[in-house]
Image: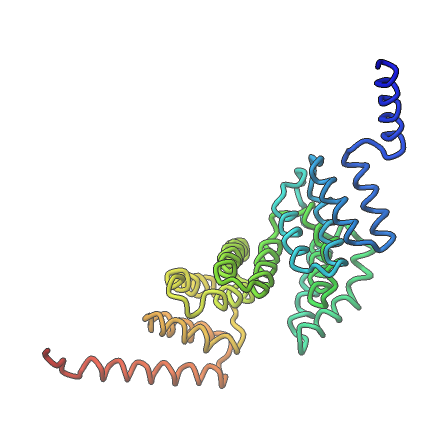
Length: 315
């Protein structure tokens, strides 16, 4: 009996020597091998097992997100990457690099001035990716290039580049904006209304945090308003959003003037609608969009005034 037990022990040791102990490193190695062989489903399984042993799951979650994306599991890849962005990173104090900051603003400008999102993304990648590749220390620029890659559907590249910058600057407003956009993408993929609303709430929470960090970027307000429009439960948040926009004298795009005015009027705040128009006048002395908004507000005010003058019928 002892001999039999001893033999089993030797077999067990032999199995471990051949297959390795069940550890994070061992499963990660197998995941990388499967990924290299383009067996992405198997790669996902091994990364999931490696994560159960990991004390620092962020980088593994990013690799898992990449594997899911390659396995045509886009929804899962977004969920996993969001999980990576919610994990704490090592303490790292980001110090602003003036060259990095300048290039970041140039990339943003090039993206915003393009005729379409995809064209802007392509221009950013063509011009700024070589610089970002040569300078991984340019954290802000690499954020911009990563988002351009996402806008072209290059999610595997986006996951890896964005996370590297996130590790160095996790409190940057673009991280919260990106969280919001990923929740929007997940919201659009949900068939169940409760799940869809759950993702909407998370998207709103994230974009409002981004606005607190960078209260002068108009694109943040635009996304927040789109998420909250025509929904009574977000009325107070909409009004506060418009007040913040006015207080911070955000430079509005012409196309946003009318929607903001409409939302203010719809929520019963004509005075805020007028303040939005006054704000837009600071930047656009003459604009058809501005004229349309003014005409709409005058019509609403006149209608409201006439309604107030009508005698109330007794029941």
